[in-house]
Length: 149
Figure (cartoon, rainbow, N blue to C red):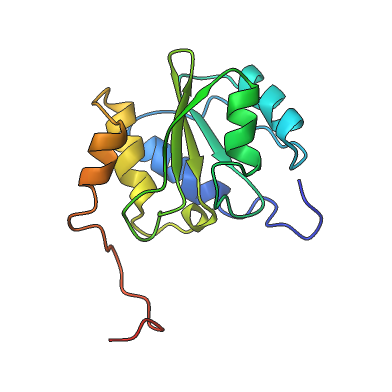
């Protein structure tokens, strides 16, 4: 948890994504925005899929969340998604459990690249670097009003 951070904002949107796929949230945890604290939370996380939502953007493979995944004994499969919104998502695994690092934009209930990744993972479909790269075709889910036309 980070002072002045987003707090619980978006918890409902993320829970709706999970329940919309016929799953249940196994639990939630809040920890310091620190690689060691997050690594412990990843290791202790219940459920079959681990979702990570940090208080700040994860924009590099060396940022807190990907680093925490590696410190927990996991591996990073893909960093970045050719879908907007959702381009700062990362996918990894710890043992047999998929780990999805959600970008801050996943706090919004709008259609998101995370929906595509979570659906594939939840259904047991392949979701590696190749499958994620293929999401780039048709990957602009909404237009940003400030983008030059």
